[in-house]
Length: 150
Image 1 (cartoon, one colour):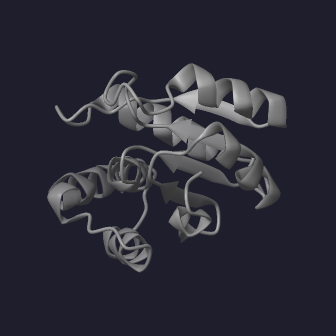
Image 2 (cartoon, helix red, strand yellow):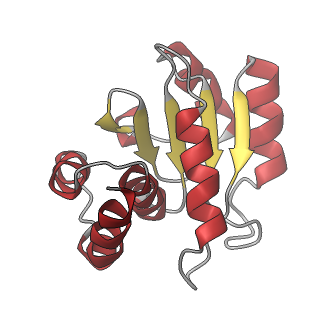
C-alpha cells in the first residue's frame, strides 16, 4: 500500500500521487475522491500494478477511472485535451486523484490542462509547488497554453 500522505493535494479538486495499489483505491474513496486518473503506461515497471488492476479496483469501489498514459517522450495535445475533459467533467464537490511513478507527470499534465482552460500560470505553479512539484520543465508550455486561452 502506498503511504496515504503520498496523495498530495494540488487543489481542492485535484491530487497527485506516486503509483497506487488496488488497496489504495479504497483509501482514495474514503478520502472523497471520485475519479482515478492513471498517467502511467502499462509495462513501464512490470512489477507495478497495471492499469486493468487499478481500473478493476476503482470499478469495485464505485469510482470513475480513466487512463491517460504519459511516456517519457513527453506530452501531446490529445493527452492535454483528455486531462482537460476529465477536470471539466468533475461535478460539484468531486475530486480526482492522478498517479504515475512519482506524481510528477500527473502534475505536469494537470498544469498543462489548467493552463489550456485559462488558468493563471503563476497560480498553477504555486499550487504545484505547495504539493511538492516543480513545473519549471513545462512552464514555457503552461505560459503558451494560458496565453492562447485568453
